[in-house]
Amino acid sequence: MTVMKSHKIYTLAQLQSGQIVFKSKLRDEVPKCGKHQDQNLNVYCNSCEQVICTTCSVLDHAKHSLIGLPAAAEKCKKKVREMVQKSERRKTELSTTIEETSKSRKDLDTMFANTQKKISKKAQQEITKLKQEVAKIKKEIAKIQNEEQKLLQATDMIYKDKLKTFEAVQATNRKEVTHTEHKLEEGGCPTGVSCDSDDSIYVAVGRYQTGDILHYSPDGKYIGCVIKGCGYPRGITFTSNGDLVVATGQSVQVYHGV
Image 1: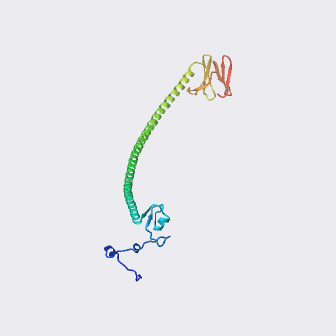
Image 2: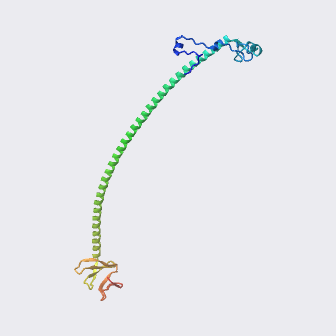
Image 3: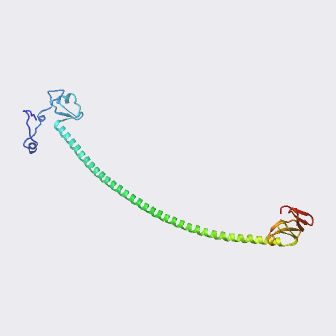
């Protein structure tokens, strides 16, 4: 590094040890007035807040508040000290505020973390509870379905048993009805008998004011009633064409294809 010959170089250690005392050249020079260059700046105008010379104080600042430079310097130092003290107090307040804010932030983070844990714990408890309830409900559903199947099977068996009983009773009733009808048909007084070409037997039965024609097999087994309510029959016979002729008290009736 190039150094000018007129300069003197000192180390920081020399300055800190006091071996070398730094002295500014500006302290040896008295500043001059800009308007009156032969006048030194030796008066401070409080009204304008600037340093002026004696001539300026008389000509331009006669009615202003003026003080000497030493007093102005002390006033400035005092003001600086007050500003420094105020800044220190503000710094202390800000530091306290920062500490309190930091503590509040930590408290908030802790509270938030604890709240999250509580919420998660409560949610898990509720989920577990619901799962238990669901399992219980599923178990109850399975139980009900099992009971349903048992009841359906039992009902089906009862239905089939009742159906068999009903069918048996119905068959018995039909048999009784047929037997009763046969008995009713057998009632009355035979008034005539005749056989067709197949030797089937036809019997005329007279009842009160009416009569029927009953059909029997060649061996005498009852087959059924072929003509019902034909009037009181007096006699019956077959023609050569196979038609049945019934004689009543009022008429002669011919039945084809009996």
